[in-house]
Length: 106
Image 1 (cartoon, rainbow, N blue to C red):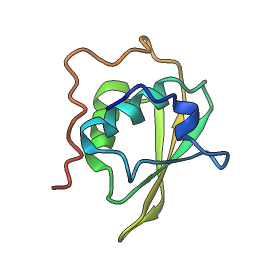
Image 2: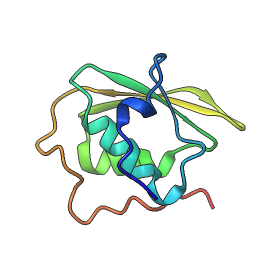
Image 3: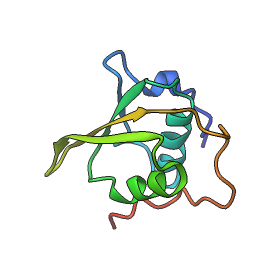
Image 4: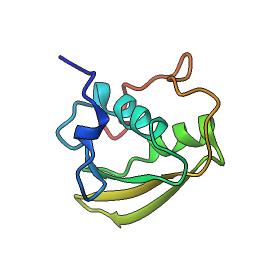
């Protein structure tokens, strides 16, 4: 499976990143890489089939204070979260030792 999909093709013109068809094993990594690639002040809207709470905690632990997380739609079958980059991150690479394989909803 190719997991190097360019993020510009993942975010539509409406700034929505629909991750519902993406396998859990790569979903968190793609979302994080997309957010890391944003310029300060930019955002995207994450569209998922479950509340991405584990991903929020991952963001908070790694980049607390560098993002906002705003639920626009909260279930039951569709969740939309606006994720905005507030400030530059020290390293645009994935954090060492991070685990991106679990969506945490099973």
